Amino acid sequence: MATQTTAKKKPVKQTEAKAAKKDTQKEMVTVFIMGKAHEVPADATIMGAIEYAGYQIKRGAGCREGFCGACATVYRMPGDYKIYTGLACTTIVEDGMWLSQLPAIPSQKPVYDINKLDPNVATFQRLYPEVFRCVSCNTCTKACPQDLEVMDYINAAMRGDIEAVMDLSFDCLSCGLCAIRCPAEIVQYNVGLLARRLYGKYLAKESKQLKKRIQEVKEHKFDKEFNELMKMKKEELKKKYYERDTE
Image (cartoon, helix red, strand yellow):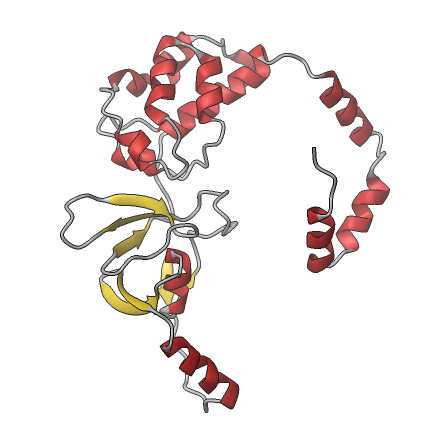
């Protein structure tokens, strides 16, 4: 949710005046945020445009890197009947865009004890019966900002193929854009979450390396390194992260 803030005008400093002059040299586009037109830089993300326009984002923002799924956004373009979806932190604005953020997506999520579930199609039938109303329209897939094959993993859930659901939904951000477009009113991202839990609990092969590492953590083997990281400043952490050895 974006809330516009107001403040008393202060004398413009020389550096601020230079920055304002620099802004006027940028290519600008017009976007409509909650129905009001704003001139924003053409290379801005939707999130950047909202803040450039003077709004303070209090909800609907998390990682700002396309990982958390908190900034689900819907928008339309002039002369186009379609409604488009995207993440505000990664979608670049376009001239004439009408946009609205969705800071929370209401969803049905049954309470269950994973230890009392069976890894089969009957579990989906009991907890998410709406899955079996799927008409394979593929609207969920078209709405996904991660380009996941959402319809395919819902079809896999209908077959009870938990491994396929897990694999196809693995990169899901739970942004909810698939659910708001689904005519069968399926909460696809929660179905994927259930499958991943079932797979991890019952079907995944045991990892000896993971088991060993968990034991090492319990024995406080890495406490010294962890405490050193906690004392580092942000720039030091970034430098250490990007200089790490990778395969």
